[in-house]
Image 1 (cartoon, rainbow, N blue to C red):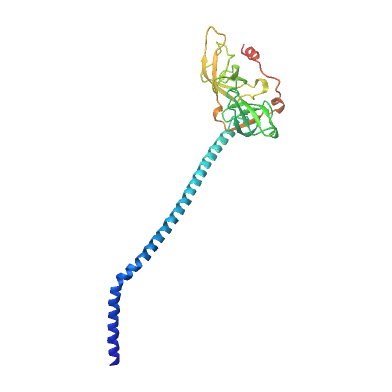
Image 2 (image 1 turned 135 degrees about the vertical axis):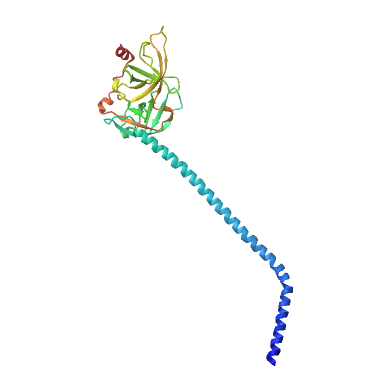
Length: 272
């Protein structure tokens, strides 16, 4: 009988607790709402802060990857240039050395560049400089770790050449025009055409025979004049060089013989 009484009372108490919980539930929810809101804001702020940090990190990585990509592209282009350079028209008997262009002279009248090879690399005044497409110029000054190169388009420069098609010889000199050569000693009856390729004739022992020099771009003939106005464009793309080749001919003694320059008169005699 006592057990039944206790069970009845506990059932009543449980019902009372349930009724009280039902009444207090909205109040408890209202009390907990600010805390839940604060936690929600805190969690979202933490997530936002984490997203900002990750976004900053990813942006940095993107910048680094782009920089590396640019560097890889530059390295790939450099490798292609070096491959072209090493495939240049160098005779097997010639010794060569790759050099990097350090400086390009801004004065168009000088038409000079500075390379990163000097007497420590056995360079010498008068040494031929080429690239993958033809003759660039010759060394006019050298120090231990650098050398100055006069381009073949300098107004002070001349190079003995011959027309590859027919063997006619002449001298190509620098021009006031950008990256152009003149052949002032070709007579009006000389067999020269636009598109003719000029190669080094080897006269004077300064520039080795056979290296490409230029291509005839313009021929102006006047029947009243003794000589034609002939212009040529260098094959070496002188406005876009980054690396060049120093050439040692098969005979270093011959390469160092700098006292046998070819005069215009001697070329005219050869033409006659």
